[in-house]
Image (cartoon, rainbow, N blue to C red):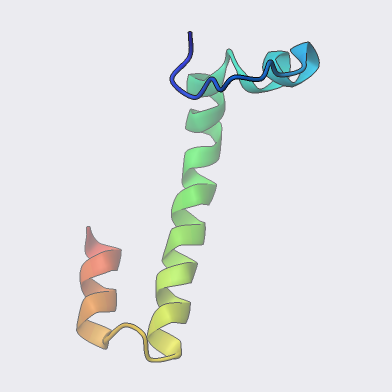
Length: 61
């Protein structure tokens, strides 16, 4: 049983597509995920939801 498994069965095609090579795909997608997160932090600062100091902290860590 998978952690996310519910009382309904998923389509075999969906499971084949989403289960298996997660680590390999994550490694390929990680740089783009990081860039997206950095852009999100920049936007949050630009609309006043983060201070410049909070933005700097987020982008350094």
